[in-house]
Length: 615
Image 1 (cartoon, rainbow, N blue to C red):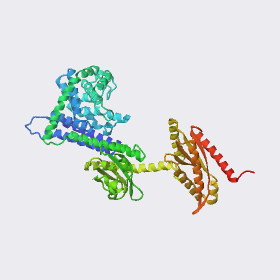
Image 2: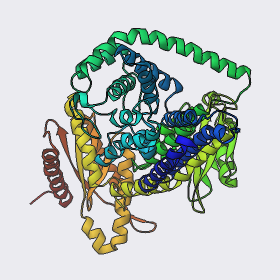
Image 3: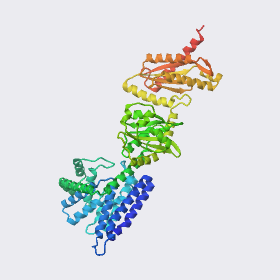
Image 4: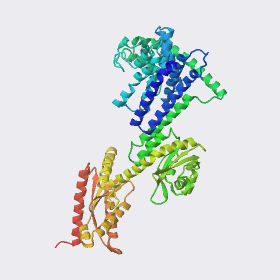
């Protein structure tokens, strides 16, 4: 098979290396991308090789042309895999050939540089896909993997060297004029002229095209970057020539674009299949987005944060107007625990029994539901609101962990009948990863809640109190507002434990906690401080209001009393001290000290009053 047969083993080796790296580094998503790359390369090879294999004996030998066509097809497939549009290759070739003409090169070299501009990155077959698509800074190991592609590419195209040193250009197109490039650290004119041309044109293309790691620059900004890099990264003479001919090349590209559109229109008229490179690019985008979804699931611990990250990367894959997660409680009820988007406030209020509404039906049958009516959920929950009418279709998928049903993930859209079987398939891939993450997030939320809650009274504990007080101090200082800290202590609580038992003491603490919690506003906080002590933080509160609240709570606790035995109540009193911010202090310690001092003064007065006038 001529030249192409000599490079086929190298293609196979590169593909195998790529698959091995993908398997070791990233798992199933990247392996899928690697398999896609393998299919692309083999498909491109078979297409290019087929005409030669079927050549009749009396036909002229076209093996060289077949080899070139094969490597070009492979290069275009790699561009598509990396998410580059077909006009990327056109721009690279027009710019490279135009700069070669401006440099006074002969036609043979110009055509060689045109080909080099297309196949320069064929060695990226040996680089894991997720590294090429990453938007974050690369590690040292990942950068080393990237830097292998010129060497691999040179070996893949070496057999095509004939009248033009194609392999040398591919190998050296990332070298720099100042010698700081790779892979060989060549300097100045030691870098092949063709490589200097291709490297310069590639940089301009990268600057003016959106990439995962940066936005596209406008033409003037890109020209400024090239001028700054002249004599550093690039041959200064070539930079000057390129900037001089660039306006004319823009017109040439416009003509090429018109030609491409004419070919596309003819393809539609002839009812030909879709552009295979566009299909390759779409398949790669799907794999990349699935990889992003899987990666985002490990960046947060709590349920709300996890779902926010998942929704961010899920939107481009399966579009939605609203996304909601329903979770099953200990019974047969599904409650919406997360919702974002159009109508999220209404959706988040939904509580559905198994078999009712869309999520309930999916939970009962453990099967996805395609293009259901969102109104079914609202009606099943007994809601009658116009907000849900903004959503016209829904895709709902069961979320299972092993054999256990966790809940259902629902995507809603404003367009009726929006979702397709393909959307359902993609959402299923996401849910496969989501179930374990949701389970872990729920465990994390429960642990975090336990770490901030008193186990006996269910009030916020001391740790939670400190967090809230830190925020309240910062808010009050910023707004120059006041707030009250009220310290309360049950009188003679030890006697209750000693006389009636600790179970009676625990009931007393829970009863007092309920009284205090019911008496404060939603944005105030009541916490169990230590043993039989409680602390209230009353926001935007004057001293007079705080004193009235203290008297009210003391009266209510005394009236309620405690229950040493079922059906029997005894009176109990509580002492309290009030400290005001900023009058009594501007820190937690100073406020607590002032409240503690006044609480013991109040306790002494109450004891003195209870014992009667002194003799």
